[in-house]
Amino acid sequence: MFQGGSLWAGLLAGGMSQLQDTKSLQQGQLGKKEYTAHTVENVTGAVGVMAGVEYGAVLGSTVLPGVGTVVGAVLGGVLGDRVGRVVGNQAGNLISRNPLVNQAVEPIKEAVQ
Image (cartoon, rainbow, N blue to C red; front, side, top):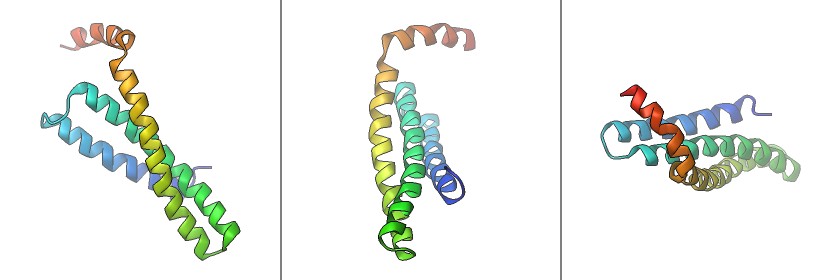
């Protein structure tokens, strides 16, 4: 699982999104809490792409070998990305707004500054 094309598709999708969000953070367009939520979203979106490509290709192969494999992989990747990002967005927002997490991170912020 998660080998070859699906692995690279997920890494590229998640990596490009993370790169854009990092640039936005550096330019002041994103706050730290939003950046945290976007990072979680990027990771879960990448995993969704990987799973979607693999399982979509398998499903496409069972329906129509050859062409179905390609179509299934593409549609599965798109659907996996969407689902992964929705789940990641919700999880990231919960994490970044959790008072317990913020209390645990506060001493680290002070030590770094």
